[in-house]
Structure formats: C-alpha cells, structure tokens
Length: 292
Image 1 (cartoon, rainbow, N blue to C red):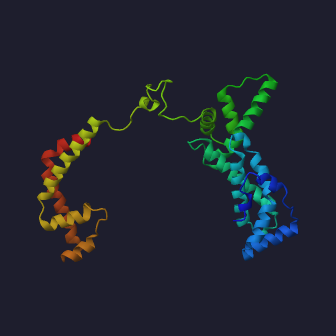
Image 2 (cartoon, helix red, strand yellow):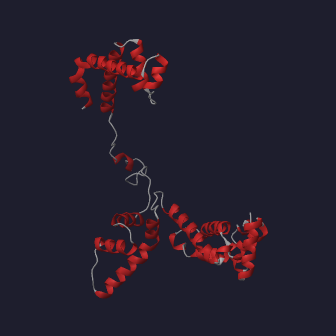
Image 3 (cartoon, rainbow, N blue to C red):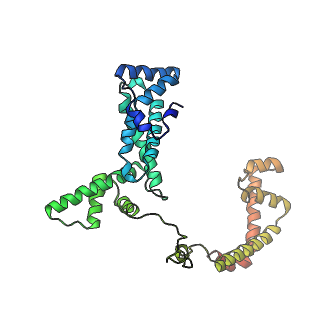
C-alpha cells in the first residue's frame, strides 16, 4: 500500500518534509495513476499531499479523538480522492482532495462521538459540526446587546441559521450535552444498588397477555380446522391452493390440473368458502369477541 511508510507516529513530521508538486507534475502523476495504474505515481501524489491531510485532521482535535486516528482517517480520505480524481476536469488535486479528506474525518468523528448515532443526513452532519460555533455567535451577540436568550429561542435561531428542523437542534443539544453510560450501571455507588435497566418499563406483552393470546389463537385454529373438515378433497385442494398458501395459484392453473374450466373452479371455490362459513356460524359471536 502506498501509505505503509506513513502509518507510524512520525507521520506528521514526514508529511511536512514531502516534496511540493507543481501543477504540471501533479497532472502527470494523476494521468499515470488513472491510465496506467502506476502505483509509484500514486504513492508520490499521495505523499506530497499528506501535509494537507495532517493539517485538516488537526482541525478536529477538539472533538476528543486521538490525533493519530484522525490522521489515519484523513489519509483514507486522501486515498479515496486519488482513486476518484479525474485530471481532465481541470482542477488541482488539492482542491478536489479537501472534500474527501474532510468527509472522511467528519464521518470518523461522528461514528466515535457516541454509541448512539448523532446524525445521518447531510443537514444533521452540518449541524453537528457547526452548532457550537453558531451558538457561541448568537450568545456573544445577545451579550453585546443586553438581550436574554432562553434555550428555546436559541435553538430556534440555530435551526434557522443552519437550515435544519427545530427537532434536530433539540436532539443535538441533548446528545452533545450528555455522555453515554451503561444501563447496567447501579443507581448508587454500592455494588448491591439497583441497575438503571431495572427502572425501564417493559412495553412488550406481559406473560398473562401472551398466554391468553396463545390460547385464543389455538381456539380459532380448532374452529378453522373443523370448518375445513367439512369440505371434500377437491374443495380442500382448491382452498389450499387459492387461500392457504403464500403464493396463491391461478384459476387457470387449477383448471388445467383438475380438467375443469376456469369458471367451474371459481364456482367450486365460492361453494367451498360458503360451506366453511356455515360451519363457523355457530361460533360467530365468539370469533368476533376474540378478534376484537
């Protein structure tokens, strides 16, 4: 891999000592990689712009990620830029690479900021990286004018400035204000304390409800089995093929199998379901009660 020589703690120092490419040399290297897959040209191109990757990675140190990890992610972005760069577009590689480097580092920061994903859309991503700056500006302006901004007003101004829904700002405020903790952590400092997970209400069906639902399904199945038993073999075949399978068969295919016309199969199907309805009539009130 072209970056093997850089994956070490001395990478920033090595990057600052790399050659500076003029536009003509940069273009030649880009063509050599794109057209001939010349790895030596790719290595030289990427090496020359590692200083750019290191510089951009340093701008994200305030988010608490290790600088070595940030540089690694910036390197990944730089490699993606080199892979996708089209020298025929008439732009410098450095200009093109900036977007890929920034995107790669931002994705890393957001993935590692919290166990809970804090944003997925481009708007939420913009909010994550700009909210504190915008918030600080509004607070500074309010202080200068003697204005008092409550949290709701501040959030509304941030949403309008960044161009995201208010609910996204409210969510981001909560995510950036708190930190993750385990639901298995005890509520007190003692080992015997109750865990936080024990305080969560179980929204699923309780045991009694599950047992009742299982009993009701069994009763319904018994009634359906009885209704099905009143049919003759041909009617059972039609009902199974038409209404009791995931891929119902057509009237034509059943007609071919039984040696009947499509219309005759339809008539037999209707008669079979009528028989089943009559067999279930005695249980109609009970069925309605179970289904409701």
